Amino acid sequence: MNFARLVDDPWRAVADALDGAAPGIAARTSGSTGEPREVLVGAAAMRASAVATLDRLGGGGHWLLAVPADRIAGAMVLARARVADAEVASMPPGAFTAAGFAAAVSTLPPGRRYVSLVPTQLRRVLADPRAADALASFDAVLVGGAPPGMVLPANAVETYGMTETSGGCVYDGKPLSGVGVRIGVNGRIELAGPMLADGYRDGDDSAFVTDRAGRWFRTSDLGEWDGTRLRVHGRADHVIITGGHNVHPAAVERALADAGVAESIVVGLPDPEWGERLVALVPEGADALDALRGRLDLPRHALPRALARVRTLPRTEAGKIDRSAARDLAAASDLEEHA
Image (cartoon, rainbow, N blue to C red; front, side, top):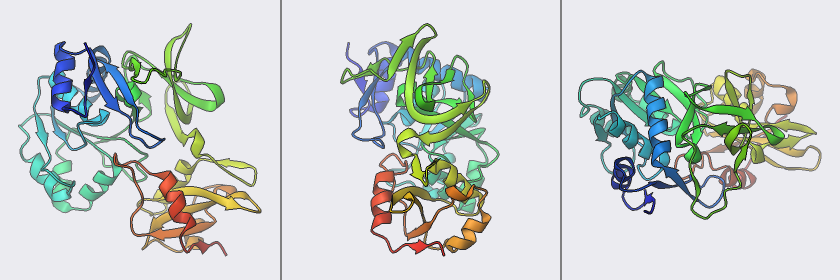
């Protein structure tokens, strides 16, 4: 049997995998690190992920499908509902809007309710009073796909995972039941557990390693693990080396959020003195650079040296930060420099 491709029919693919008509689903990666690849996620991995998630959230419930069903986040919404014999309500067709979200929530049956959102969607919902009220009715709001860069509502759960782990497998820094975490070569996060995918359709499974401790997926992310909680710094290839210091852009973006910048993207641009200088892309209405620098709880070398004010921040189709596009945009912008 062939793995059922989400891009063909996600609802049918998930149903076929969980009902035994297919060995699993073929899910595309987000493409934020290059060309999208198809990951072969077995039915057992899907079921293990769904069960572990529902156990962490406190039981089965109805789901609002607000993320694309042809990607792993949306497919796992369908899988969790199917495993729990629960209902799925969908957003209206077209672009995501806060009004559409509020309307879709009203179609959910009574009982426990869950939703998965990316940070951009969450910001739009929280900015609309009616949609924010609707959001408060959920027992849990899973927020993944990118660091939130914002203060999350009380019912939000920050998730970490990827297509290769059947979606989120670490919630609020704590692994789901059965998930193994360790820091491997060069500080990279490695994950294990029954929700690991079988591999890639193209056959290059070098990111999956097996040793005495079991089978692991070697991510492209750097982090810290204290045995209880995982802290994700960001992708290894996103590290900016400035003045001999390694700076994780996600840490600077979190600090900017704490300083009142709703969303930002931090990139490195070539600099003859520093090697690279930190440039923050921020909304047009953000405060002046030197005022922001004074509010950032960061070491001096991690402070942005320039701002690029943009109308919208570049993101991938899946809603993740597009750092390559952000770097190009910063390079072409009229930068506000540190005095």
